[in-house]
Structure formats: structure tokens, C-alpha cells
Amino acid sequence: MGKNYSDEFKEHMETFFEGCQIVSQMYYNTRPCDPVIVKCKFLRKHAIISDDMHGKLAFVNYETGNVHRRGSGNRPSKKAYGNIYDEYNGMEHMGVRGPGTDK
Image (tube, rainbow, N blue to C red):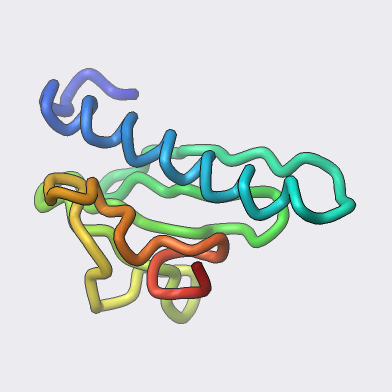
């Protein structure tokens, strides 16, 4: 993770990423398929959570901590489906295909 992010953002982002990994593991452990690798990539405005099965799953805004799902053109949707600073750490609406999808 880059050095320009606050310690609070890093801490919440790590917890959100771990939650995304757990959601994927719980889903794919019940199906006969290869293990799915969940990755995190940091760009200018967003951190992107993706896996090798569904591609981009979630975008996390650095400034606000809002969690968005993939919108059109592989860009973040306008609607936020949670926040990494809330009591659920952004995981309340997180499904295996991203926020606001199946649980």
C-alpha cells in the first residue's frame, strides 16, 4: 500500500480486504472449482478489489472510504454500498460478486 494513505485508512482497508477474502472462500469452498485468488490494487482515487473469477468486485474511495460496485465501463458505480469506516467495515452488502449483489 502506498505511503500517502492514513494509518486509519490502511487499517480499515486491510480488514475490508480480509472480509472480501472470507466471503469468496465461503462461497467457493462449497463448489468444485479451483481456488479463487482475491487481489487488491491501488490507483489514483480508488483501491480495487478483484478476483480471478469475476474480475473487479469493489472500488473503495481513498478520501471517503465509500465502497462502490463495478459500474459501466469497469468504473465505480455512483451509489455507495457501504463504507469501510462504518460498524460493518463496508461488508454489510458485500456478496461474492461485489457489494449489493448476492450474499
